[in-house]
Image (cartoon, rainbow, N blue to C red; front, side):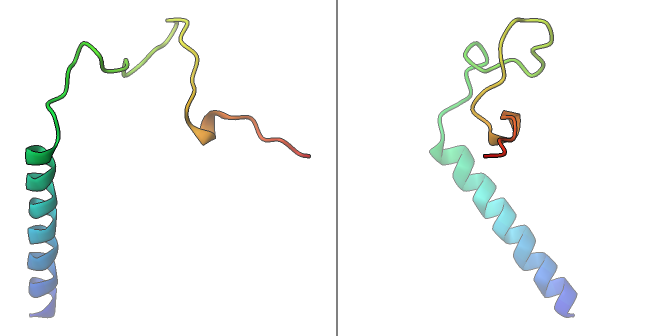
Length: 57
Protein backbone atom coordinates (compact mmCIF):
# COMPACT_ATOMS: atom_id res chain seq x y z
CA UNK A 1 0.00 0.00 0.00
CA UNK A 2 2.86 2.38 0.77
CA UNK A 3 4.40 1.92 -2.67
CA UNK A 4 1.10 2.71 -4.34
CA UNK A 5 0.68 5.92 -2.35
CA UNK A 6 4.30 6.97 -3.02
CA UNK A 7 3.97 6.22 -6.74
CA UNK A 8 0.68 8.12 -6.98
CA UNK A 9 2.11 11.14 -5.14
CA UNK A 10 5.20 11.15 -7.36
CA UNK A 11 3.13 10.85 -10.55
CA UNK A 12 0.87 13.67 -9.38
CA UNK A 13 3.89 15.86 -8.65
CA UNK A 14 5.40 15.19 -12.08
CA UNK A 15 2.12 15.90 -13.87
CA UNK A 16 1.64 19.09 -11.84
CA UNK A 17 5.15 20.34 -12.62
CA UNK A 18 4.73 19.50 -16.31
CA UNK A 19 1.38 21.32 -16.48
CA UNK A 20 2.85 24.35 -14.73
CA UNK A 21 5.82 24.44 -17.08
CA UNK A 22 3.63 24.19 -20.18
CA UNK A 23 1.36 27.02 -19.03
CA UNK A 24 4.06 29.35 -17.66
CA UNK A 25 6.72 29.16 -20.37
CA UNK A 26 6.76 30.61 -23.86
CA UNK A 27 6.53 28.23 -26.81
CA UNK A 28 9.80 27.04 -28.30
CA UNK A 29 10.97 28.84 -31.44
CA UNK A 30 12.72 26.19 -33.56
CA UNK A 31 14.47 28.85 -35.64
CA UNK A 32 16.36 30.23 -32.61
CA UNK A 33 17.14 26.90 -30.97
CA UNK A 34 20.77 25.74 -31.01
CA UNK A 35 21.54 22.77 -33.25
CA UNK A 36 21.24 19.36 -31.61
CA UNK A 37 24.45 18.17 -33.27
CA UNK A 38 26.87 20.80 -34.53
CA UNK A 39 29.35 18.42 -36.10
CA UNK A 40 31.58 20.29 -38.52
CA UNK A 41 29.61 23.52 -38.30
CA UNK A 42 32.48 25.55 -36.87
CA UNK A 43 30.56 26.38 -33.71
CA UNK A 44 32.66 26.00 -30.59
CA UNK A 45 31.27 24.45 -27.44
CA UNK A 46 30.82 26.89 -24.61
CA UNK A 47 28.78 27.74 -21.59
CA UNK A 48 29.25 24.43 -19.85
CA UNK A 49 31.74 23.64 -17.15
CA UNK A 50 32.16 20.14 -18.55
CA UNK A 51 33.51 21.61 -21.81
CA UNK A 52 36.37 23.37 -20.02
CA UNK A 53 39.77 21.78 -19.74
CA UNK A 54 40.93 21.00 -16.22
CA UNK A 55 43.48 23.39 -14.74
CA UNK A 56 46.05 22.16 -12.26
CA UNK A 57 47.12 25.39 -10.58
